[in-house]
Image (cartoon, rainbow, N blue to C red; front, side, top):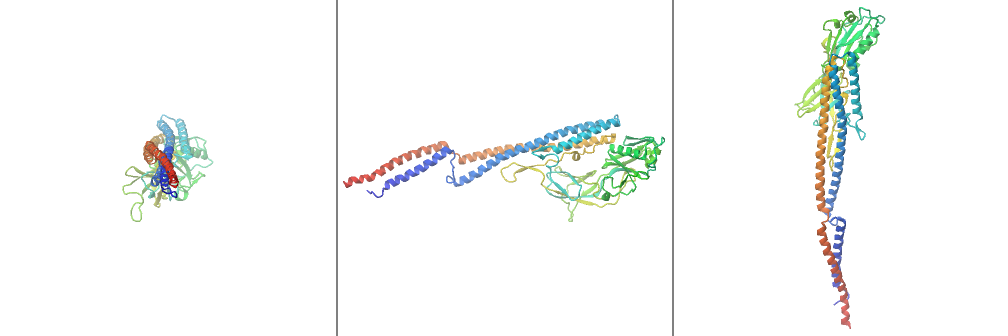
Length: 515
């Protein structure tokens, strides 16, 4: 028996310390509800669980992001729905105006309503926003950059990857243009006589020239009348046209305000083979003094425009620039469209002087004859910027890209709708039908996005649920199991305390030997 070292007490004390440590751990787990309260509890498990916590928080925020994306789409669709209603009204007005029982005054009233509807379409397009971001004015469409000023990208399918796409314009589009066969013989001081009075008809729209009208007044009536029908009228001294040098506003001509001795030019403002103009005059003498004697013949003057001519550009290696060999090019007016398999579409609007084609407009019985010009290759660089990315995952680059093309009167083609004649009103019906189809496609795209977000939301909810279950299995305390451990450690602590007390009493037994 020893007094200096109480080995039994040391053994009992160590056992007591272990039991107390285990009891403290058990109490911590029972009170916190977690079996991992620090890295010492489970180093690997702690690292894994913290990554899982971050993932769950990320998934939770992704659900909020998805809800925001749905709100963006709902806002855009609401505006598009109203635009569709206005397009339906445009269809109704166009059909009404195409009926020849309408007088010019009634068609003018219809035209004014059409203009107001177009203004409202552009206003809605420009002012529809979500969190200050414009939604349907092209702000959320892919950015396409051109090396030629004036080119506008109308559409580019999602399946077209970022890169450069080449189009070669070989011949510019042309308006329907009528050029006088002679110069205006009426002097600036003369007035229309009773024998010269009559009417000029532009596609059926009547411009009345009355006795006593001066040359300025006659030209004013012609200019205003042609403008109403969707065209322009002016006079020129030089019959040579050059769109590259003079621009396209007057089809490459240089207009003059000195009407006497000049040549009258009448043209449509729009380009393409569907632009047609029939000019007649019921008074041969009036037609003669205005330099348009053909207008007084039985058939009058008949002119039509022409579409741009283009082809897919090729590189030095002979391969197409950007486009696949299966792509097909078509044109209408100044619009060039390339279509490919899987509904791929690439559409662009080029300026009327891309190739600087010089036209001979003297033939007043058909299209203008194309002359000199230089083929121009246009490079369109398609990028991945401009669209709205909705982050729908907890990790990097887990996004859904929203691409909403512009919905404006320009992109829909209704910007210059004219119903002042039966011919233009009939064309307006086709224009509105195309605009409705374009809008339906965009709305269908938005609906597809919304459905995709619904599935994304469901997936995020399931992923978050399953990940939370896994995290719970890893870090949550099994209360029944831990309570058993707690009870056991409590009993062991009490037992160790009792034994330690007895062990501390053992040295006192040595006194009995010393008595």
